Length: 80
Image 1 (cartoon, rainbow, N blue to C red):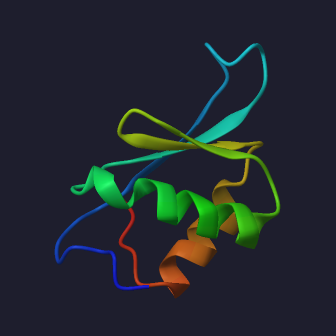
Image 2: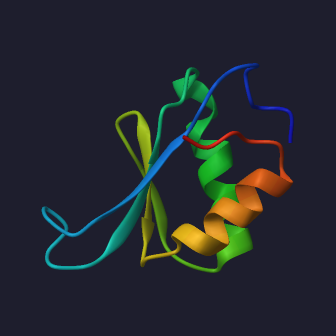
């Protein structure tokens, strides 16, 4: 994938408040906001769910923390 900065750690958490009662997984901690849309498209295709870019973070519909963390680690990310 080649988008991870050395030493960069991503933050993944589940949220419900502010999303109309829907559970979402939020991925943040990116050093380069310009790459968010391409990463969101890759996550959308890999997870098969709705994904949107919200400011400097990616919001994924549903609680996909386990699947997403596995996918991110396989692609060289470091999670906090």
